[in-house]
Length: 305
Image (cartoon, rainbow, N blue to C red; front, side, top):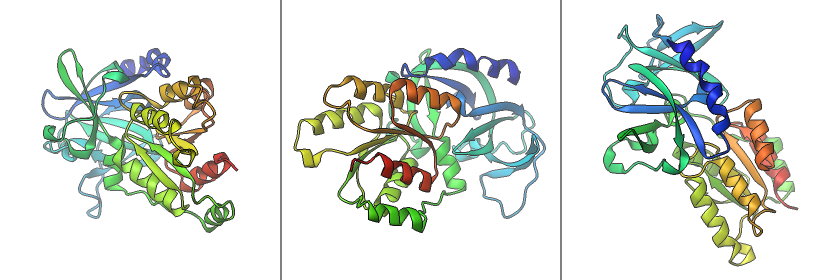
């Protein structure tokens, strides 16, 4: 079942750059539909036999050999408040690759791939009870679709380190990066925190936006104000509700007041496809999450003299 499902991914690649995203739909124990970007998905499997050590995180059901590498398997159902799936024979495993790592997520069942208009994705109300582990919701055929922030789930299991080497910190000091401002745009609270922590280590001031539309509004407002209140660089995620990073960059390049702005796209999705799209929309740089030294060096290169 999994292979024909994922074979349709190529059909959806042309949606990128048009504020649309292809989502793999799955369930965690009831009829509620959840989604994950198909570009994060490597493969869908039946739950394999898992090996577990007592010292593993409570959300890690175990590990297994995946194509010659041992990868962790996170019980996504348990992470989202559903009954655990580690012992459920009918469970499925979504093997993912993002943030330069490969891991599996246990889900109850996998449905199909659909494409979603980014303009219809909105941040979930706190009253829905998803917490930080859902970063967007929309309606699909009248039913609620919740987009899981798998980066946040992975971060809760294995928190990333926000560390800069002495070499890069010294470079930031020599370049006098202080008194510069960066617009950080990301719909993931975890990613925003990582970026702000990193840039503060470089003595950079940060302005925050939670999606591309909010980021574009802030850029346009600042462009009309005093020069010393504007930003020197935009660092944006690619996958975001309302307006994604590609659409944001296109809008910046088409705006006479903003087109000079340097834009660095920073995404959990890596690979040749993103590099090609970055060039197509006119971004200045693409960096895969999360590599502090590489990101910091790219920021120093792009900041105006």
